Length: 296
Image 1 (cartoon, rainbow, N blue to C red):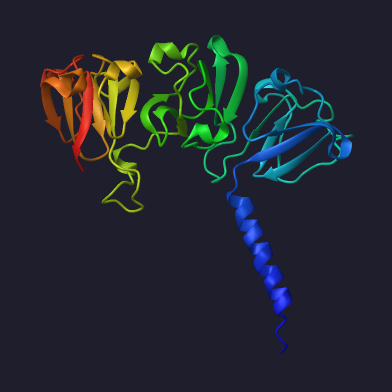
Image 2: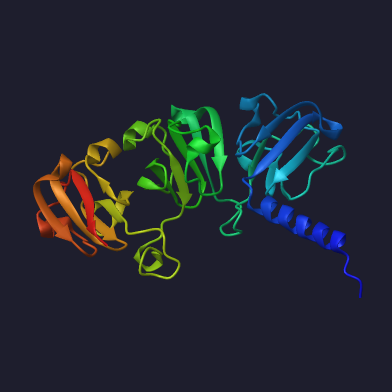
């Protein structure tokens, strides 16, 4: 058998290109005219109302640069919605010709529902331009969106919005927030991720898959109920994330943690190494102003 090295190289290059495409951030280019002509806009995030971007009901073709995308002919992903994995050069004869009003990427790892998404708005009360996300984003600065967002709408699922990159200083939400000042995160969102992994799902050091590390989640009510904040390393002033003197219970995903009554890890401090269903038992109910991990 004759070895065809040119053919072998071609296969290698194709496989490498396919791998790069599969791992690339979602990206789509939408155009006003057929065959990718006219005014075009490239998006790396979803949009729940394309009118805010000046391209609602004006799309005749699109090119999927990476990922799979959900296109809908109604705002807020209502109406006729379809999933696309390939580009379309002419939407004529489809329900989407000059009718696409919202779109968003489909979660890359295949988990979760296509109805699970979070919308970040630049202004309070869900006004102004918006950005729709279906995937975890460890650093919004990479998309030019760091420390933006004054209101949030949850379209499905449970999400963590985090003050710092790398999912640090997080707040877990399951419903809309009309004004991020209410949770101390107005124009301070730097990373987001879907879902909350409780103690049984922790994949930090000492567990298979490692890498996430220990976390503490503070809850406003006893019994792990009510609004919450998740912290990975430390928070020297809980007022900065809108949770000063507000915790009544907590869960740990590993490690030993110090809880202090004053900011800067001062005042009365106690150490916990497991879940606490009622902080009144520790004389710390509604009295915690700073927390930090002191060991794994």
